[in-house]
Image (cartoon, rainbow, N blue to C red):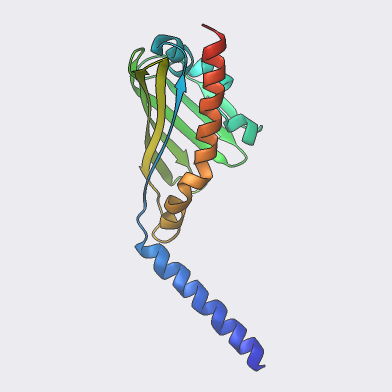
Length: 179
């Protein structure tokens, strides 16, 4: 009986620590990855600036083949919009800036089952460098949830960073072979 009480007390203490620490963790996250692509910004923009081209380089459908994407009538430029659903949830994004020489910006939201929105601002920026274009893909946001949000924000880089790297590698291969 003493062992069981000790185990339960330890378990309760761990839950209290998890909740207490999670409550005070910052909920903000900032994720960024870059790659140099041996192509001009305008050539890269053909794939980045048109939502109809995203399936060619975005990594999400590899991770979740159940994803169904719905594009708006407008797939390029400010106001271009897409929504998606998959086994891991649903979401939407809308372009807020698009320039063939500078890149794109978009607002994105993952929508939970209870309609809570995890919103973020994303940028894919082009910078001319020797031998090509440095493409930087970033995402900033705040995780919802008083306790769990801080834990998710802390893990955001490890959860999504590899997907950013994979997407940029696919974009690099695509842009460099279709000059």
